[in-house]
Every structure is written in C-alpha cells, then in structure tokens.
Length: 253
Image (cartoon, rainbow, N blue to C red; front, side, top):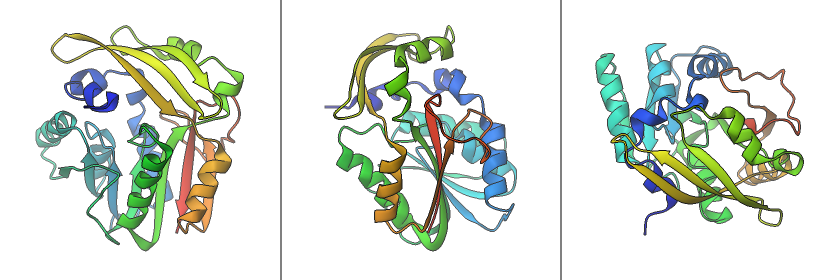
C-alpha cells in the first residue's frame, strides 16, 4: 500500500511549484552558497529534490548537484525544467532510507521536508539521516530543514497552514497533535496536475532541537548549529524560537 507522501507526489509537479512554500529558492541558495564558501568544486547531493528547484538554481551558479527523490513524477518535472535551461543534472529515483552512495559527496542538502520527517516511524526518519551521512565524505556539511517541535506546543498548526495557503495550494486540516509521539495527524486536500481533487490522511513528525542535536551527534557530527528557517531567507542571525514553524540545521562532520 502506498504511503500518503507517495500518493501526494504521484502527479503534483506543476501544482507543487505554485505552493507558497516553494517560492524562496533564490534566497535559500544564497545561504547555501555562503555556507560552502562559494567553492564550486564541491559535490552536492539534494535529498528529496522534488521538482529540482534547488538543484537547478545551484547548477546554474556553477555547482555539481545530484538530485534524488522517491517520486518519478517529480523527477520527470525536474528533468524537463533542467532540459529547458540546457542544464545537465543527474536526477535519480532513490529512497532516502536506502541510498547507494558512500563517501561520495561534500555536501548534502535536504530542504522543505525532503523525506525527513515524513516517514511513518522515527526509525525510518533516522534511516534518512543515516543514509545522508553515509553518502558524505569524512569532512563534509549537511544542511537541512525540519519541523520545529517547539511550534505546536504554543500554536495551532491549522492556523499556521491557513495563513500560508494560497488558493491553488493544498489545504490542511489537523486531526490533532499527539504530544507523546510529537506527530501531527491531518487531512490534506489537494488538486493534482490533471485537476483531480484528493483527500489524504497524513501525519508528520515534529522534532525538538535537542532531539536533532542528539541524533546528529550519534552519527558523528562534530558541530551542529540550529536556527530558525524562514522561507527564502535562511540566516544564522535568526535564533530558533517557539514562533518558528521550521528549523534550519547546519551540521559538520
């Protein structure tokens, strides 16, 4: 049986690129470039690359990027976009819980919930972190965003999604937040690229900063910094607070 995130992305490339949360690519890539000291020799893996927005933007800036995703439909869109720009990018179908790479990349990026933290169990989410780490060389950097567990303790997730939704985008209705598992159970209503409307029962895992810190330490990262993730404006100046829906993690091996 297909999981909700597999069904959602079966035929959702065009619509995905119209979502409000996908509009910050340029600013996000500015931050990544700064983090890499503008070193174009670095090999980057984009985990959960979707329609390739970060992979394409970074390739246009001269970096070598490999994009991986579980959705063939999203990858087809990514390849079409790259082709239109005459860019050569490897967009490969892989499950982030089981990547074939070892000591291959200098940098891993996993933005906008690229797989982690969407899996059904904490163990599966951890497998994504483990596989990303295995893909990296001994001296490397891992930059990702994930859902901030501090946010739902103080705010309604429903209210947040209402303010961030545009007319065409997916609509969320929370069925409740489980404080024990730190999972938000919700119903997502969305329209696919052919105009068909679907309703999916979803759940997503929110992480405490201390959990992320501990998980990454257990994987051998020496330096772990956690910030607020503001769409299109990632910055190390933004301290993570209870007001931030997402956190930005920069980890170094």
